[in-house]
Image 1 (cartoon, rainbow, N blue to C red):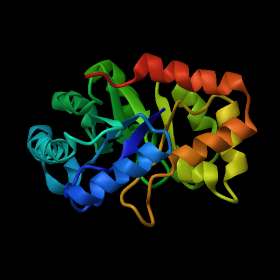
Image 2 (cartoon, helix red, strand yellow):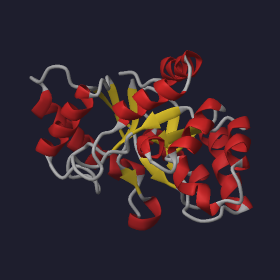
Image 3 (cartoon, one colour):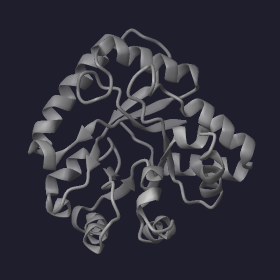
Length: 236
């Protein structure tokens, strides 16, 4: 399985603090059966004023540092780089955002605003596909449920070709697991991720989440996840 959302690159954002922590995270993932991981550090254009190219300089340096450290390690997940792009007004007009798609794919992981979305916000996100020729993937969709009137937006977005990523924490939660499994059964979730930041309070947990899905659903559901992995999986 592929972890489509993580913050494993060292010293880049609020994720892994250093190379050694990154290696520990990767080893924990390997123990859970994770074969590939998308390294998706935060890109905050509206906060920092950083351009995609400036961000890529930092990201590539962190990636190189980690790859050099693990070059002799065996059995670790394969790393593919992308970004978690925080929504900002006018983003559909920034052509260079396409450089932040997940390596070898057209997938752009987007973090939506933590508020009730206006029609302008929705239109901006829908415009990403047409203007930038990317496939938007909304990160950790469960975090936005409380801000919206209902869950119709999930299905409305999916009809427009926008894909959905859910965090493992929501699947494993005592009070959220039932809703998570229901959404998965209703084909409202396309990708899974740990959104791991460290080895402690935000440690890798996708393996246990997958086990829970397998217990609570049927083979057809897992086949669907595998189909999406084969169709959209990152490639070198």
